[in-house]
Each structure stands twice: as C-alpha cells, then as structure tokens.
Image (cartoon, rainbow, N blue to C red; front, side, top):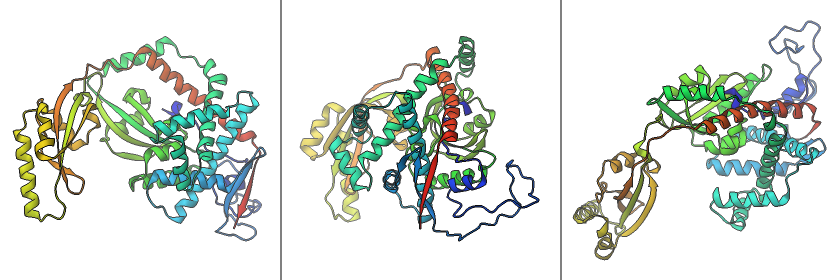
Amino acid sequence: MTEMFAEKWLKTGHNAFAVLAAFGLAAAPVAQAQDNPTEDASGLNLPSVIEFLGENNPNFRTAAAKVNGTVITGTDIDHRVALVLAANEQEISEEEEVRLRLQVLNNLIDETLQIQEATALEIPVSAEEVNQTYERVATQNFGRTVETLNEYLDSIGSSNRSLKRQIEGELAWNRILRRNIQPFISVSEEEVNELLERLKASKGTSEYRLGEIFLSATDQDREEVRQNAARIVEQLQQGGSFVAYARQFSQASTAAVGGDLGWIQLPQLRSQQLEAIVQQMEAGQLVGPVQIPGGFWIVYLIDKRQVLTADPRDAVLSLAQVTYDMPAGQNAADRNAAQRRFQEFVSSMRGCGDLGRARSELGAQVVSNDQITARSLPAALQNEVLQMALGQATQPFQSGNDGVSVLMLCGRDDPLLDSGPSFDQLMAQLEEDRVGKRAQRYLRDLRRDAVVEYAGQS
C-alpha cells in the first residue's frame, strides 16, 4: 500500500530548528547543544533539556514564505484556508485554524516547487490549460458557470486565483511524472497474472471502496505528525468533509481525487495490517490514524460489496417521486388524517401509468428519474425499493417541512455479473503504485534542494 503514496510533507533543512520551525513550534533560535547530549532515536545531536534563547512569543506564527525566490503571501494562505473551511462547513477553533494555516503553507510550498520544476524542465502549464481545467471544475465539481464560481469564491473569502494555482500545481506535477517517471516504470505480465489469480480465488468475498488520507513521517517528526493526523480525524468525526481534507492535506497519490481509492480487494492493499483493519470495518466507518511504514494512514470505508458477484444495489431503476404538500399550521390530528388520505390515494393508483391522476386529482408534484442506481438512494430506502415489484410504491416518508412523499418503481435493470478488474486495469494500477513511490523520492529531492525563507508576524 505504501507504494501508492506520493509524499508531500515539507522537511526544511537538516537541523533541529528547521524541523521545529517548519511545524510552527519555534519562535527563536534553538540553544547550542550541551557538552553531553543524551542519545536519542532522532540521530541528531540534541541536548536532554531544550532551552530557547530570546523571547518565546506564543503568538508568533509563520505568515509567509519565499521558495527559490517565489513569494507565498499571507493572502495566498488566507484564500486557500477559506476554500478548506467552506468545504468543511463547520466552525473550527482559533488553535485549529493556526494548525490549518501551517498545513496549507506546506501544501503551497510543494505546489510552488512542482510549478518551478515544470518550468525548469521546459514543460510549463499554460494559462489556457489552467483556464480550461478551471472551467471543467466549475461545471463538474461545483455545478456552476465560471462567472458564478468566481462570485462564490469571492463570497467565502477565497479567489479564482487560489483555485487556479492549485490546478496549475496538479497539472504541472502530472506532466513531470509523465515525462520523468512513467516511461521508466516496468510491471511484468507475471506480476499482473499472479494478482489476477488471487482475485479470482477470492470470488464471493468482500471488496471495498475506500477513501484515504496519508501523512508521511520520519523518526524525527513522527509524534508531531501523529498528533496532526489525530486532529484531522477529530475534525472528520465532527462532520468535516473527508474529500476536502484528503484533497488539501493527504500526501497520497489519491489526494487529487479526494482520497478515493475506488473499488479494491484486500490483496490489492498488499499489507496484512491494513487488510485486517479494513476487513473489520462497516460502511461509513472512519479509522485512524494508523501507523504504517512511512507515516500515518486515515481510512474511510465508503461502501463494500462482494467480489465478482452481481450486487443488487447496482440495479438501474426508473423511479417516480410523488410529493404532496400539506397546508402549513395543521394540528397533529389533521396532519395524520391528511397523511392517511395521501397513502390511501397512492394505494389506489394503478402503477406508473396512473401518475397523471396524482397531479390532477391530488395536486401532487411528480418527479421522475430513469437512470438512478439503488446504491445512490438513502440506506433506509434501498432495501425497500429493491423488494418492490413494478408499479408498487414505498411507505410514505417526510419530504421537507410540510410535505409527504412516496417512491414508485417504474422500471428496473438488474446488474450483470461483475467480472472484476481486467488485466490492463491491474497493470495500470501497479504502474501507478510505482509512479507514486518514485514521485515521493522526486518531491523529497526538490524540497531538500530548495531555498525556503520564512517571514513571521506577531
């Protein structure tokens, strides 16, 4: 599994102060080492007691940085933080926001290094390419036009410039990997065939759709990264957006797609530790942080199904929703009576061909969808709809403040037997894993050689 991770955690310099400053823990230079430093696991020449020189100002925070001459401003950080907070849709504490700003700064430094490297290799991303991708993001991710997305970003305290910078960084990095890494990756047919045989042998067992967030760690910063990962888990448990956190903070190659690993079988994880964890999880469950080689893993089980077995929830349904809006302000008795009349009326309907009568006689609203999967329905409706015959309706359920609805089944196309991933799909996945491994080393080299200057504010 670790081969799927593309490291994005910034390591600045090779001394204790650089490591501490990178995580916002130092406000002044570190004291010189004492004569008899205590041996520790860090491999650094650290004293047993740390004494800081100068004023230790707890309000000092890294505000901006200059990366190989390119400036990252406080405004850049503000705009990216606003994107995360808007996606999170919940208030966070002042202390948590300070940590969030530092994480965002680390991400912006990585993006800057990636954009600079693409320029140095003479494969820069053009403004036209960024604008085209931005337009697709506006339509597909936000359901807006470019103009309305610009207005939305301004309204939350962000900007189109911030989102376009993130797009440019991702396009630049993908271009670098395609040129400098992918051509040199090799996966043998024997490896793919071996994995295919393992998958066939697991027919009827479960497969899982997972979301992941990975934070890389070294012996020197492991505890700090663990605490950071634990805070992310806490925010997710309080309702934070997993996709938003994965996109902004995960250092896995899946960060660009919100941490989505897609449908996988346990052998594809290639880790007995992770297999045991995922096997015990239920859909909707969040686990982590889990310490694994290279860092910490946070995993979210989106869904699970049976390997190489048709899943009824993949059936494509034709559904009609009949909604009756009851007069506002009714007392409980009148409301219950109105609901009973609505249910009796629905029971009298003769299938979907009778939907027009619901409009004309009851004044109900009727909305149809001919291409909806059972899986996409709320869990409470999935089983009921799958047990219905054509023309039957669900039990009434609340719809809005004063509405009551039913779903009527008008058609159903059952799924075909799932044949599982193909040879080419598995080959592509193994290649992607190895690209991620090389990308991790590539980005680490860029950070090591970078000149990063920090500016602080009180």
